[in-house]
Length: 139
Image (cartoon, rainbow, N blue to C red; front, side, top):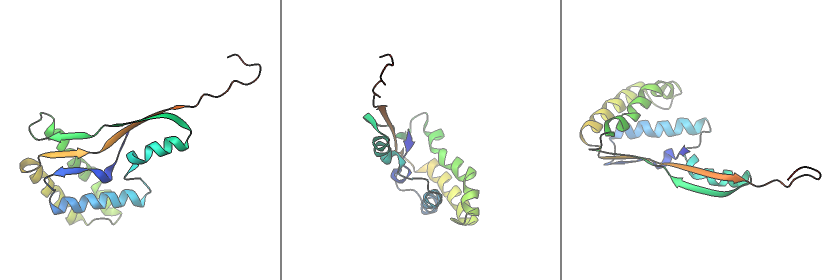
């Protein structure tokens, strides 16, 4: 199970300050070789590891205004900005005032305008190929 951060979607489009934060988040991850499209790459990684019978299932986390879980699901990015934001600022991917602006704009937007958030995720499963028994071993 992993995210495909590069495929996250919001409706309507987020405010510019949050988009700047999100791009800085993606850039920061990429700078440390964290794959922003890992969910899409898992099937090939499984194949290259010799796994068979690979199954791919969408596990998108979808938040829709009106759903009882919407406030907590929408709050995820507030938590990310508060938790990782200072690290992203320290690493030079965003200014501290930009982080403050993104946090404020996102909070107002989620209270009033955000109707749908889709965080792209996939589960990928596979099985190991059977190893032939060695001579003289059971089964």
